[in-house]
Image (cartoon, rainbow, N blue to C red):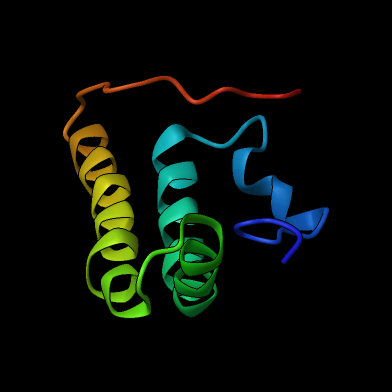
Amino acid sequence: MSGILDLSENDYGVLRNGDDSLHQLERICALLVERFEYLTRATRQEMGSAVSFARTAQVPFSIAHVRTATNHHAMGETLFHLHRTN
C-alpha cells in the first residue's frame, strides 16, 4: 500500500485551482466512498484496528466528517480552508 488513497497523478486534481471548494469536497467524499475497502484494509494495517471496527466505524466516520463539511459549505458556512498546492 503506497498511500491511503493511492492517487494517480491525475487524481491530484481533487484540489485543482479554479474548482470551487464545494466541488472539491464532493470529489474527496466520492474518492473515500469509492475506495472504502482499501481504506478499511489500510486502517487495519496502519493502525492495527480490527477489520470490523474499521469497516463499521473508522472509515464511515471519516466519510461522515467530509459529508458534514460538504453540507455546511453548501449552506454557506466555512469550516476550514482547503490548502491549494498551485
